[in-house]
Image 1: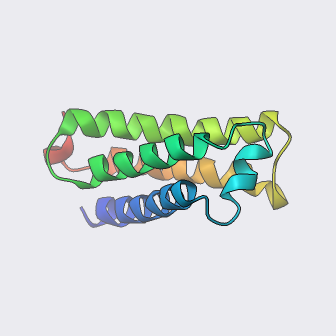
Image 2: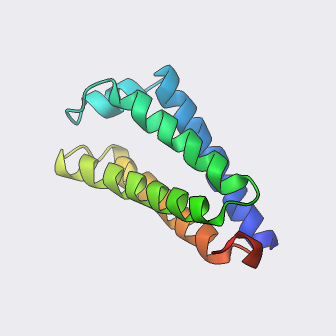
Length: 120
Protein backbone atom coordinates (compact mmCIF):
# COMPACT_ATOMS: atom_id res chain seq x y z
CA UNK A 1 0.00 0.00 0.00
CA UNK A 2 2.91 2.37 0.72
CA UNK A 3 4.37 1.74 -2.73
CA UNK A 4 0.99 2.46 -4.33
CA UNK A 5 0.55 5.77 -2.54
CA UNK A 6 4.15 6.85 -3.12
CA UNK A 7 3.90 6.27 -6.86
CA UNK A 8 0.36 7.63 -7.12
CA UNK A 9 1.06 10.84 -5.19
CA UNK A 10 4.19 11.53 -7.25
CA UNK A 11 2.24 10.86 -10.46
CA UNK A 12 -0.74 12.96 -9.38
CA UNK A 13 1.43 15.88 -8.27
CA UNK A 14 3.46 15.84 -11.50
CA UNK A 15 0.46 15.56 -13.80
CA UNK A 16 -1.49 18.19 -11.85
CA UNK A 17 1.40 20.67 -12.12
CA UNK A 18 1.63 19.96 -15.83
CA UNK A 19 -2.11 20.43 -16.28
CA UNK A 20 -2.12 23.71 -14.36
CA UNK A 21 0.85 24.91 -16.40
CA UNK A 22 -1.00 24.12 -19.61
CA UNK A 23 -4.20 25.81 -18.51
CA UNK A 24 -2.24 28.90 -17.48
CA UNK A 25 0.02 28.61 -20.55
CA UNK A 26 2.92 29.00 -18.17
CA UNK A 27 6.58 28.66 -19.08
CA UNK A 28 7.38 26.53 -22.09
CA UNK A 29 3.90 25.04 -22.45
CA UNK A 30 3.06 27.31 -25.39
CA UNK A 31 6.22 26.35 -27.27
CA UNK A 32 5.80 22.64 -26.49
CA UNK A 33 2.44 22.64 -28.27
CA UNK A 34 3.02 25.10 -31.11
CA UNK A 35 6.48 23.75 -32.03
CA UNK A 36 4.90 20.45 -33.05
CA UNK A 37 2.11 22.11 -35.02
CA UNK A 38 -0.81 21.90 -32.61
CA UNK A 39 -3.09 24.90 -32.11
CA UNK A 40 -2.71 26.74 -28.82
CA UNK A 41 -6.24 25.89 -27.62
CA UNK A 42 -5.08 22.28 -27.20
CA UNK A 43 -3.46 23.40 -23.92
CA UNK A 44 -6.95 24.00 -22.49
CA UNK A 45 -8.11 20.52 -23.44
CA UNK A 46 -4.99 18.71 -22.27
CA UNK A 47 -4.75 20.69 -19.03
CA UNK A 48 -8.38 20.01 -18.15
CA UNK A 49 -8.06 16.30 -18.95
CA UNK A 50 -4.96 16.01 -16.80
CA UNK A 51 -6.60 17.64 -13.79
CA UNK A 52 -9.77 15.56 -14.15
CA UNK A 53 -7.67 12.39 -14.47
CA UNK A 54 -5.71 13.21 -11.32
CA UNK A 55 -8.91 13.86 -9.37
CA UNK A 56 -10.37 10.54 -10.55
CA UNK A 57 -7.28 8.56 -9.60
CA UNK A 58 -6.81 10.11 -6.15
CA UNK A 59 -10.40 10.30 -4.90
CA UNK A 60 -11.91 7.27 -3.12
CA UNK A 61 -14.47 5.03 -4.79
CA UNK A 62 -15.50 4.98 -8.46
CA UNK A 63 -13.28 2.08 -9.60
CA UNK A 64 -14.62 2.16 -13.19
CA UNK A 65 -13.83 5.87 -13.47
CA UNK A 66 -10.32 5.14 -12.19
CA UNK A 67 -9.83 2.57 -14.96
CA UNK A 68 -10.81 5.18 -17.55
CA UNK A 69 -8.57 7.80 -15.93
CA UNK A 70 -5.55 5.49 -15.93
CA UNK A 71 -6.08 4.57 -19.57
CA UNK A 72 -6.64 8.22 -20.46
CA UNK A 73 -3.39 9.28 -18.80
CA UNK A 74 -1.56 6.45 -20.56
CA UNK A 75 -2.89 7.51 -23.98
CA UNK A 76 -2.25 11.18 -23.20
CA UNK A 77 1.39 10.55 -22.24
CA UNK A 78 2.23 8.08 -25.00
CA UNK A 79 0.47 10.38 -27.47
CA UNK A 80 2.63 13.28 -26.29
CA UNK A 81 5.82 11.25 -26.72
CA UNK A 82 4.78 10.09 -30.20
CA UNK A 83 3.68 13.57 -31.25
CA UNK A 84 7.07 14.99 -30.33
CA UNK A 85 8.88 12.08 -32.00
CA UNK A 86 6.94 12.42 -35.27
CA UNK A 87 7.56 16.18 -35.27
CA UNK A 88 11.31 15.60 -34.69
CA UNK A 89 11.05 17.64 -31.49
CA UNK A 90 13.05 15.51 -29.09
CA UNK A 91 14.15 18.26 -26.72
CA UNK A 92 17.49 18.23 -24.92
CA UNK A 93 18.66 14.63 -24.50
CA UNK A 94 15.26 13.35 -25.66
CA UNK A 95 13.45 15.02 -22.75
CA UNK A 96 10.23 15.59 -24.73
CA UNK A 97 10.03 11.83 -25.34
CA UNK A 98 11.46 10.43 -22.12
CA UNK A 99 9.40 12.48 -19.64
CA UNK A 100 5.95 11.57 -20.99
CA UNK A 101 7.00 7.91 -21.26
CA UNK A 102 8.21 8.08 -17.64
CA UNK A 103 4.78 9.41 -16.60
CA UNK A 104 3.10 6.64 -18.61
CA UNK A 105 5.24 4.09 -16.75
CA UNK A 106 4.31 5.70 -13.42
CA UNK A 107 0.65 5.41 -14.41
CA UNK A 108 1.10 1.72 -15.17
CA UNK A 109 2.87 1.22 -11.83
CA UNK A 110 0.13 3.06 -9.92
CA UNK A 111 -2.54 1.02 -11.70
CA UNK A 112 -0.75 -2.29 -11.02
CA UNK A 113 -0.10 -1.47 -7.34
CA UNK A 114 -3.60 -0.21 -6.51
CA UNK A 115 -5.29 -1.92 -3.56
CA UNK A 116 -8.34 -4.16 -3.96
CA UNK A 117 -10.67 -1.38 -2.83
CA UNK A 118 -9.68 0.60 -5.95
CA UNK A 119 -10.21 -2.23 -8.45
CA UNK A 120 -13.24 -3.27 -10.44
